Image 1 (spheres, rainbow, N blue to C red):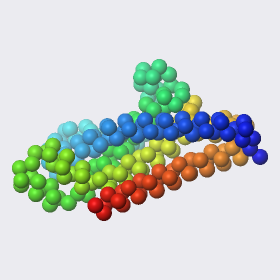
Image 2 (cartoon, helix red, strand yellow; image 1 turned 180 degrees about the vertical axis):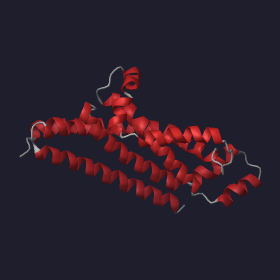
Image 3 (cartoon, rainbow, N blue to C red; image 1 turned 90 degrees about the vertical axis):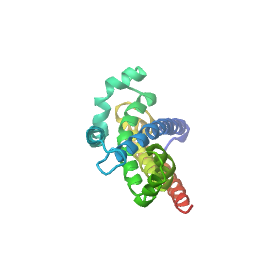
Image 4 (cartoon, one colour; image 1 turned 90 degrees about the horizontal axis):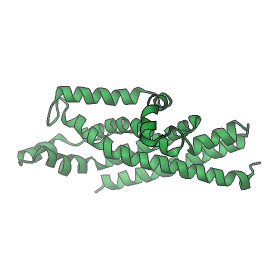
Length: 219
């Protein structure tokens, strides 16, 4: 049996830490990932502003960021994390690698969502004399909103998974809680309880994201 009087407050604190890490990282990822995804689309060979060199460099950065396993990324960016936060341990420090991992992940999803916009709508806007900035702001982003919401939801779920992995090296949150109170103390019930909390979080966020995407698609 789980001693909830002892474990309960720690589990709640870990849940709050996970929410803090994921929410801040997600805000930063959206602020950086969407512009990056737009840039990938615009500078592609078939984009509105083809720039082969720019697209190649940005694409290589995005591909590299997506290909590095998160647990390895935690170690690789430790100097950057220490420079930004002054430490590599704790929930605030974990925000740095989480954001670095999420930005290229979201950027590719954003690019894919924007490509789903019907080319005829873009051409119609160009024929009316709209600038590239106006096309992005009034055509591409509004038309791609359901896909963008779905992309953000997938990224958010991935961040929850990443944050749990960060607990293995002192990143705080539910991953750290599961290791300290479950694995190290051979308490399977605590580990199961942590997994249940993570599953509930993922299910609620996925359901909310799906519902919002469907609502936007029907407008």
